[in-house]
Image (cartoon, rainbow, N blue to C red; front, side, top):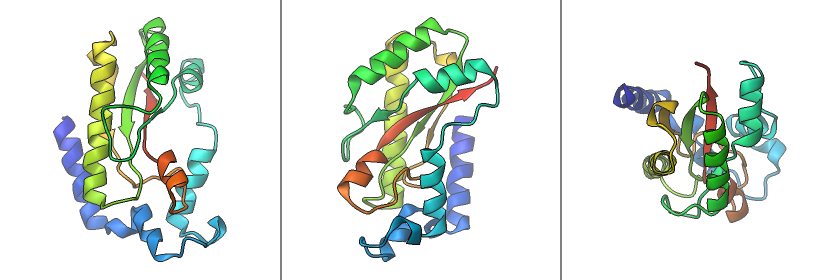
Length: 176
């Protein structure tokens, strides 16, 4: 099932025109361009990540969104997060809420090729998933680990400060 989803996602990206979705497409715009002039696909995702998460499944999801935080990674790394204490805090909260299920979503900056960034974001998601399991979170609570690479950026600028905001693993609540 997991591999089928990965194949579907990769196929969709291939046929949909990678540059339409990727932040890398905005690399054609000079770094001095203001956010309001950024391509609309990038601007949409920056605005999306800037808003509070929508709560569709009640107070359990709201508590999850408020207490489980993203894990940051340094450039070109997938096995040493920049904020390891956050991972430990997430594990403690998840242990206290054993009925919550979730997705692990890996991301990467647009600094590099799309294929490499998808692979790197997959490694990040897998590493976080295994770290959670090793720290006592039941594997059946993790619905799926998903790599998104550079496709849905939290920041549109093409500089190190912005790229570092896009090198993350996020968690998404899943209803029972």
